[in-house]
Amino acid sequence: MQQLESLLGREHEIDSLNRALRDFAQSQRADGVGAMHVTCSDESERESAESFQHWFCDNLLPELKFWSRSPFRQANLGGRYEFGATAIAEQHFATPKTRDGFKLLLVKINSHVAVHGGHGTPTFGIMPRYEVESTFCGGLHALLDGVSGPFIDDLAQTFASEGKPRLAMLRDPEQIDPSVRALLAAIVNARLQARRAIVDIQNHTPHTPTLYFVLSCVTLNRKQRDAELVVGYYLADRRDSSNVEYHGLGDDPSEYRFSLDHQRIVIEDDHVGQPRSARDHREHILSLWMERREPTAAKDARLIEVAQQATPEQLQDPKLAKEIAKTLGWILLDLSPIPTSVLLFAKGAAGAHHLYNVHRLARGEQDEGSARKIVSEFIDNVDSLSGEQARGVIDSLLEHHRKA
Image (cartoon, rainbow, N blue to C red; front, side, top):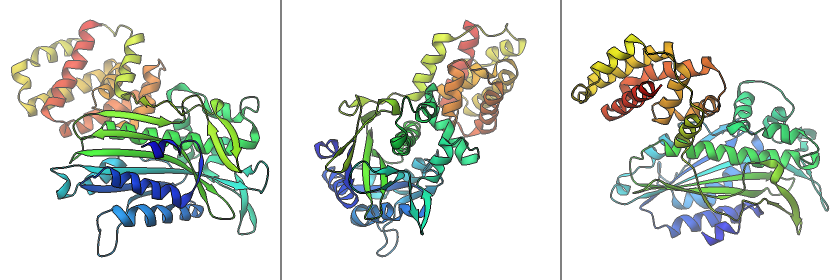
């Protein structure tokens, strides 16, 4: 771990970083190792993918077929972590020999940026591609330029998470030096995509005991061999606990300090040397909501009837508990969709992909459309809940309305 701490916020030769990851994984003495790699679709990410494959995957992963060892991969525009991916990767690497021991699942998330120029401060974000000036990462450049589109809107929502105006900071020359804007945008993106992954991990019960290591990096695309800058890492121990710790840079680009050390990039802020516990985002959202919770509309006869049906004896039947939860969902979709959506998320009955919308609602934004979508999705998927989950949802929703 000490070796990994020394990598934070600094540029490193791409192969040496992946060798360090290999050495860390071997030191954990896990019964099995899995890997997942998230990158931009851009062809410039080939060196990053090949180095990770050669130095980490080919040495540690189980054989998918003869002489073939592969990580679970995501490559998309902007290098976005897609909610639900770690659950699938975890299931794939839950091999029989990890049942009585544990596995290490390494999730490597790469954003990327062009670094062009020799001595002195380099130019970031633009570099010749096939003899034509081109942007690296094109998706992040489009985001900063205010372009709209499906994947850009997803990036914008991520950059605006928790109410921080990160895009406004990056666009403001008084806060961010335009010469390093592209680099800092890539760092923020890697940092926030890793947070998406850890929220997913917190929401998932692994099939076999798992130690998750989520590493966020920025590929530094150069005319010569690429390098990587390490942004930070999460260590999530899901073997017999739910401890999650974060080491690395924060998510506020206005706090980053750029420098060069023997022509290698260094990024610092006040957080990089201070390991800290990662918060449980469901509990955090619930606390935000409770701080500003307002009384709900007057009692409804339908709610009173459901409350009378939801006796402890009745709720012992999982099928009946799910039917009552669904009925309650339909009633509250009409009566109070915003409080209901927040409470469903807090109880784990709404997917992690609703994180940003629920965060907005918990902070007081009046967006009934988003809230109704969350509650409707719960109603559609209520049969996938366990009986215990259904009982927990019913108790939480009824308790909220009893106190209103």
